[in-house]
Length: 164
Length: 278
Image (cartoon, rainbow over all chains, first blue to last red; front, side, top):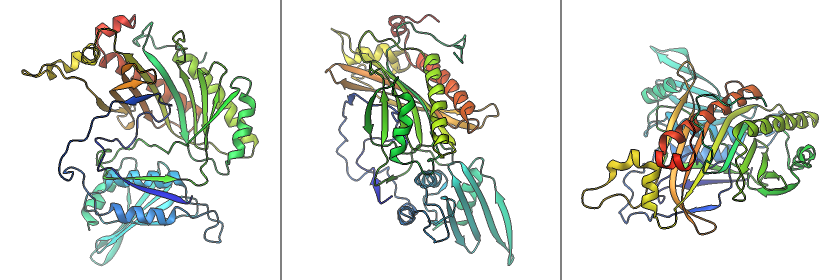
């Protein structure tokens, strides 16, 4: 894996994260609707965490098999894509950017740290996620497993503890 | 045939389908490299003797978090170099194909000539399941695997041409008028044309989200110059279990959502034209 792209969508009239025609060859051309002549887009936000997070994911994406000389697997592209989608759906606009750490099995770990505690989300493969919140309480650290079957609790922990 | 048609499913004698795709996305198969595609083709080459190459499809996931899925201001794309290709194994009539890449296995039917009739979902599912079993066996024999499915997808593409003497506005009205009739403005009348993207959440028996039905419509111009409205319905989501049974269960369920969605979104005048029987 040696090339990555960061694409802004400001100039597109509309977009969806998942194009609907994923599987098929298209033999048609959509009728183009020209974007209205407006000033700077007013509805496209710039999340503070997005750019540094992409930079971090790009930094670990090229790691190949045995990148640590201990036999670790290459970082998986599908895990990186899944991690990005997870973040998009749980991060508040002013959320703190996580640190992305490669794991030995091709997965990654996302980490946040603040004076309220530390959060670790481990993504071993798409849809295989575990998360722990190490909360600071009166000088003690309390380990709280976070439910990941749905992502509501993850979003809540980040919203309450890890804002930039 | 491994599946029967659900009795209550809307049925059309002459649906406006031009392409149907069913398949699965799985975790990247460790060690799978471009030469393995040749091994995979061997058991299929009699039935699908023609080959084409295409760019690999990026991984796609239907996920469910607090933020709407369409929110991001930056999309993240990874491309691979050297890029692992996607290969089409195509039948002699060029109407059916298998698509293979290191994290996808798909089966398409496409209307090539006017006389081509949709072979129906049940037959496509038979072809998909037997081909997927052959693919799995080949991967295993090559010492690769396991194949761990993570998403499944059913896509129906319908193309409706503007009839001679009519226009896009009238066709749009015939197709979607029962929903969009109230969009006519007092001073300007009906919209000249229409495009939409609708997303519905699919849930399991416990109410947990498992996927989405995505319906989109837009005016378009076909390669032969004909103006059409293209209506695409896709059901995509997680298999109930990471195996062939889980894939088949989702595909069957996705097909039901697609067909019911199509019947609901389109109007009775077009249903008559498409010979709706129930």
